Amino acid sequence: MTLDPSAAPAAAAADKVRVMLVDDSAVVRGLVTRILEEDSGIAVVASVGNGQMAVATLERQEIDVVLLDIEMPVMDGLTALPKLLRIDPGLRVIMQSTLTLKGADVSMRALEMGAADYIPKPTATRDLAGGMDFKSELLAKVKALGLARRRDPNRKARPGVSSTRPTFSSLPRPSVATQPLRLRTHAPEPPDIIAIGSSTGGPQALFSLLSTMRSGTVRQPILITQHMPATFTTILAEHISRVSGWEAREGQDGEPVRGGRVYVAPGDFHMLVESRGSDRIIRLSKDPPENFCRPSVDPMLRSIAAAYGKRVLVAILTGMGSDGTKGGGVVVQAGGTVIAQDEATSVVWGMPGAAANAGICSAVMPLPEIAPWMIKLATRR
Image (cartoon, rainbow, N blue to C red; front, side):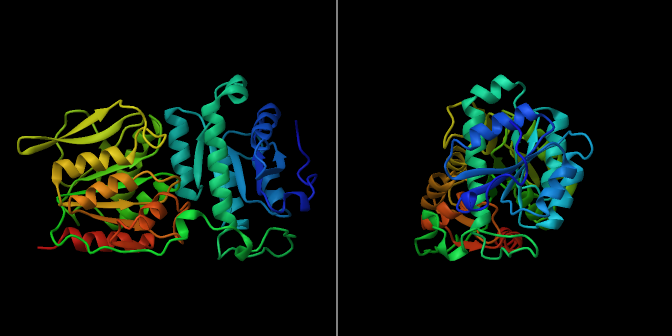
C-alpha cells in the first residue's frame, strides 16, 4: 500500500501522532502502515520511497515522527537526516537499521547527527507481518516520541505549513509529571562508583555528558546500562571512547572494576557488580528481562548498592518507561545519591520522570548541568 503524501485529510489526524514513512520498499511501507494504524492514536500521513521525497513532503506537511530507512536510492537516510532537521529541528526521527555491525555503526552516527532513536529493521516481511516484538517496540517508540514532540512547549508553527495540531495546554500531561518533586540531600561522602541508566535518546545524552566529564576529571569507574541489543552496545562503547576520551568497552564477565574506565552493559545481558574480597568484579547475567529489558538498569543498581553501600552516585537519563526507579530506591536506602535529567532536555521523560517523582533524587537538572554537578560530587575530599 502506497500513500500519496498529501492524501490524508489534516483534520482526521489533528489529534493523533502524525507519522511519515520513508523506505524504498512499498511492501515494507504498507505493512508498517498497517501496524501503526492499528493504534487509534497514530496516523500515517505520508509514505515515500526516498529521502529526497521526504524532504519535499516535510516542507509542506506537519509531521511529528519520521521512520527513516538508511539505504535508499536517490537520497539515503543519512543524507536526508540533517536536511529534515534543518526544516524542523524538533522533528523526532527514528532510523530503521539492520542488526549488523555496519547497521549499528551507521545508526550511532545518525544518533550523533540528531536522530531521536532507531528500531531494528526486520530481515523479512514475515517478521514485519507477525513479529510481536517488532510491533510492540515500533508502536511504543512512535507513540512516546510523538507525544513528547507534541507536548514540547517550545515547539513553534512553521511558516507556510498549515497546522491543526492541538495546543500545548490542551494536551494531557503524562502521569509522571503530575506530582510535586521532593528532593533529598545528597550523600556527604564522594562516591566510589558512578552508574548511569538510559534508553530512548540515551546515546546522545551519554556522548554529551561524558564529553564534558572527560577522562581524568574523575577517578571513579562508570557503569552504563543503555537499552540496546547486542552489536549496538559494542558500537556504543566505541563511539563513547571516540567522542569523550574515556576507555570505554562492554563489560566482560569476571573482569575487575577499575577506576577511570567506562563499562557498558552488553546487549541481552544484565551487567552486575559482585564483591570478591576487597575487589569488585563484573558479572553478566541472563536472568529474565526486567521492565521488559535486558540489559536493565534496576538489577545493575541493586548489585552496585550491595557492593559499594552508600558510596554510589547514579544518573538516570532520558528514556521510556521507569527502569532505574526501583534500583535507584535501593541505592538511596543504602545511603547513595541519585540524580535525574529534567524534562526539557530529555527526548522522553519516562525513566528520569519516574525517578524524580518517586522522591529518590537529590537533583533534577538539564543535561548540560549534570556533568559539572557529578564532577563536583566525585572530586570532593
